[in-house]
Length: 277
Image 1 (tube, rainbow, N blue to C red):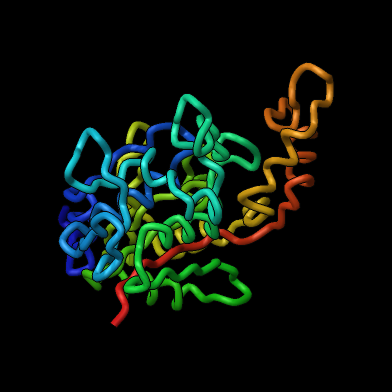
Image 2: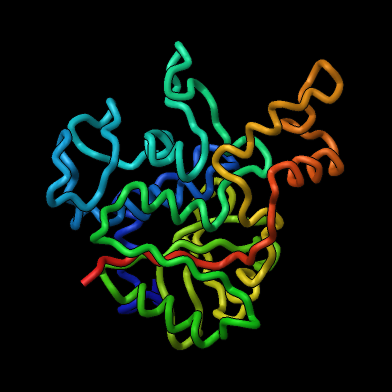
């Protein structure tokens, strides 16, 4: 903790606000969005009933925490906004209403992209908040600009940062991953990643240049025909018994799934949620 400085407020707010480990290995983006929203408790003005006046956050009230709004990973995936703009995800209803047990995050391309994660944030915030997506393309963005953006957000109590990076760029096991950013340490030019996979890795300090390189990596399906495109996979029963494009078993089947989804490559990067004004 000797590294903590004026750029470390987010670390404390994220950990004290409601920082839960991702509930499965596909929900890193969802867990990150939930932790970001929960860290803004002091600023929360939730909508009550149908009254939209003066609300900043539109979070469900989980029966376990009623009457207190709290961003759980299951609850922030329900609702028309998520269904229509992010991913098809049911509410668990036994009768199949509102999607039943549908969970598009467990279908190809698996997880959420940078673009989808930003839209998930928008589903739960009002126009009072600005969501900015920045792909880290070295041909368009410099290390200095990235450092400036992240530092400016970290020192602002009304801003949060979530990052999308390749774990291999940090020498870790895994691939594309999301987590909140918690702090910056000037003398070592390092950023603190508060890993939502708490069962796998603790928070880790990463040099700015290393973080830049880990984010300037390609997501093979950075965008696709979501949220309805996955329905094309369900139309194919290639062997008459199992759907090999919904649950691909080989690299070839997975690539075929991506083709049907109309996947396009995009760079990974970061998202900044910031209060306007």
